[in-house]
Length: 379
Ligand SMILES: [Zn+2]
Ligand SMILES: [Zn+2]
Image (cartoon, rainbow, N blue to C red):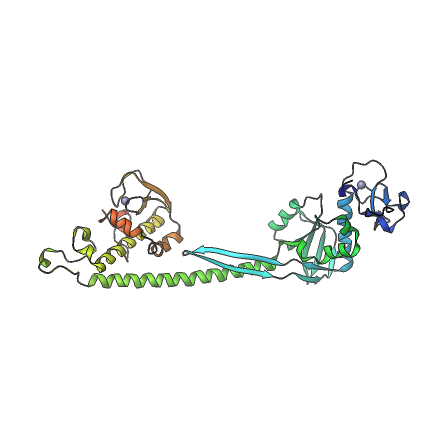
């Protein structure tokens, strides 16, 4: 016989009894807590834990479930206290090439109830118990083998009702039969309970998120400060005279960012000038991302040749004339804000410069709506 057919509690005059507490057989005078048909107590065995079974053939399969549920409810009603589950959640975010985390941990805690209602059916919410703690309602649902509770949990979560589950699904008949052990499982086992919705937990999660966002904002500020410093260095480098081989000075164009620098054979040898060109290319790529984000709703394409971003089109790349190789690209506000920082960690400006020494147009001019160069680009 399976545990499911063994009924742990029989009902008599409104009270629940275990099989060893009553006379053997039909003399127990107990009814099935589910179908209310007579039960037979089997309490003479020495190897088998005492149990009840239906006296007549029965289709009833809920005797076990209903008995455990009613007894669990009765125990809380008598004790007027309950251990609340612990709350643990890790708040995570990924930004600026970094993972940000904060842990939220609230320990399990026992509460004394002011009032208990059992069961609770109201506003489409069904719970086995409604406990009032410091004037606030907490709904409790018991998980029992053979009972599906997911349909009850969804509306609780959706309406943000303070609510918890005490999961008695895996209890053996032996534990249910032992009054002290069963009581402990119902009232105080920290491992068998969990929150469906914890208002305090969610409040702590919100706080953790705010702290996380503050961490991110601080880092973004530092990144922006570095970018400003970088642009300032770029300006300084532009103002400094280019190193030109002696005797050739008259024929060489004075360094200016709009000049086709790669055409000057002497300059790539010069580390400072090369750095200036790499910086400029990174700025140009970053600007092309910002344009896609601000003018085409973020949807664009990346040229496999020059690595610049441009609006979706069938035409050639506006920056290098490449016709065939594009990857679709979605530029979020976050990506547009951080792309320059990201580019500095990659060799993409180098690759772009190597393949396309001179762009056909600057990022800010590639867009028809943007006649003037954006600040920070082009000098
Ligand atoms: Zn029954
Ligand atoms: Zn291109």
